[in-house]
Image 1 (tube, rainbow, N blue to C red):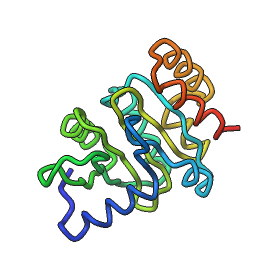
Image 2: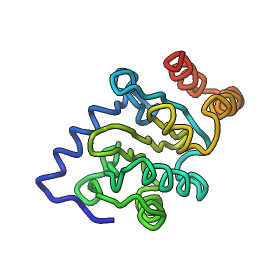
Image 3: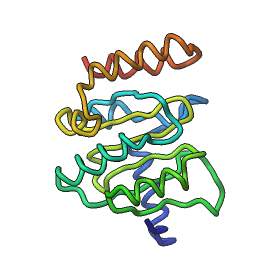
Image 4: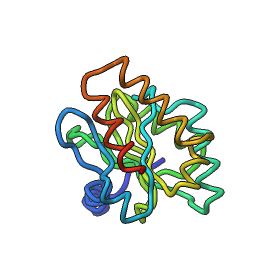
Length: 172
């Protein structure tokens, strides 16, 4: 994992704007128009904040198998000059390191071509990719993951049921 150059910071932030938005206190949401344009499905997952060990394994294995070698980790909240986008290889070590480095903050992992994205927030994580890649990244059926999140969202309340509904409608 390495910091991107000063010249690349603006490009990374522009890429972040392509795949995500921050409409309010929800955290970073993956744009449904991006998902539609790329043929991606977005599935909310809990627990959030940090990626689990199982998620890290699934992400690294499935993305490498799909031909990806690296990605950007971009803070999705303003953290000042000290926390900048990072370039990482798609392996367990780099994903674990970015998880530890950015885990207290909201961040987005995204491929250079914005073919897939993962938004890590305080109360949820959003996985966005083409359906076959999404299934591999999650390690199970996206529909069952979505149903688990729906239950979690109902229990927690607040804005989480809105997040669940947004991406449930997008999948139809």
